[in-house]
Image 1 (tube, rainbow, N blue to C red):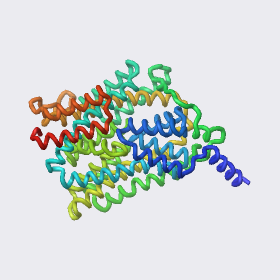
Image 2: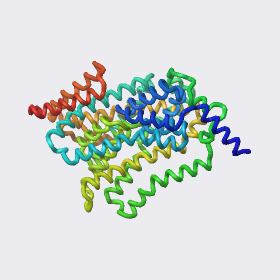
Image 3: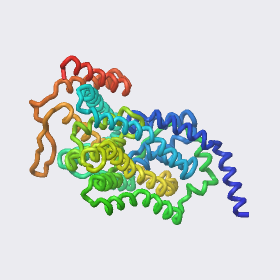
Image 4: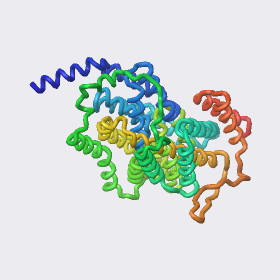
Amino acid sequence: MTALTAESKATSHNEVHGISFADALVVWLRVAILSFGGPAGQIAVMHRILVEEKNWISEARFLHALNYCMLLPGPEAQQLATYIGWLLHRTVGGIVAGGLFILPGVFAIMALSYIYAAYGNVGFVEALFFGLKAAVLAIVIQAVVRVGRRALRNPLMVALAAIAFIAIFFFGVPFPVIIVAAAITGFVGARLGRPEFAALEHGGKSSAVIDSMLGEAVPDHVRPNAARTLRVGAAWLALWLVPVFALLIALGPSDVFSQIAIFFSKMAMVTFGGAYAVLAYVAQQAAEYYHWVTPREMLDGLGMAETTPGPLIMVVQFVGFMAAFREVSGLSPMLAGTLGGLLATWVTFTPCFLWIFVGAPYIEALRGNKALAGALSAITAAVVGVILNLSIWFALHTIFRQTFLVQGFGLFFDAPVLRSVDWPALALSLAAATAIFRFNVGMLVVLAASCITGVLWRLTGII
């Protein structure tokens, strides 16, 4: 009788939401193909399709899911797709939504990595990426402005962003410390009733398919369940960490594959604050500590990620590719690079599914929690400072050919050698910024125009 009742509820559930798995598959493919422009653009695409066009999820529940994903380490847009896919069609739905979100980027970045590794020192390719870097700099600055307009809505939030920027840029304070401090500040402020930490207000539809589905008779997979949490957590931890330990045992900790597995696994746990925070951490560690890529190559990799569908953090695949391509002996460089890129991708994104499938049922139970909303508001403000740090770091290595390290009295930051200004790079960066901010030219148009300009300048001898 119980099984029959459960089956009846499941049937009723399917009738309520009326979204077949095939319909969802088509939509997630569409989201994946259109997921250009970094997290802001990707989240906007999902919002337009899922909230406005399909009315599958309400504005309030969409933002609640986004809030949780922004609190997690890793790429929030991919995690948001996984979360909503899970709401619709359980674990399989989450895997399909989150997996499809990154699949186009996996193929695109791998193909571009092959070309870069084989021909990156050829004048035409160098000119192409010269243009990309200038446009990417303008796009990252645009991200600072977009997030800042939304997050810095009062003087306290401005102060949090400023403190985060000063701490990370001038003093090298670790990202996790900044994000945890911001979260605690927001949590305490909200508990004390401070209005500065109130959740952001948004308009939108309040009645949607998922909200109806999760109404009075909440499906079993959305309810918190300790035993299921342990099973799911153990399974995804094994998928994530067994390959890491296998590499350590087989190759030793000094092997580049082991280092890739450890570094990007650590990154998956500590890089809070969204894709731009992750990129800043990866850029500085990969270029300055491991020396897998140079700062300019890191910018080239980001240009690849900006111009292909999928999360910006897909740049990790390029970093893993170049690290193994250069350091592994006994394998062909291209095969080593392929394995290194896929390994970096695996250990970066497998934890994203873990965070969602383990935590989402409990987050659904916390809808409307003011303290959680306060923590999110403070983290979002701090992330503005983190993104500003990233934009300045990129600017230093795009516009100046040389930098020097400033150390002493607690300071630890790169400063430009002023006489090393790369005037063509500065001119192209200003042109890209003017197109974006003054004339509202689309990102893909700016990227394409910058690439073409770089190639033309190479042909005419300007660069």
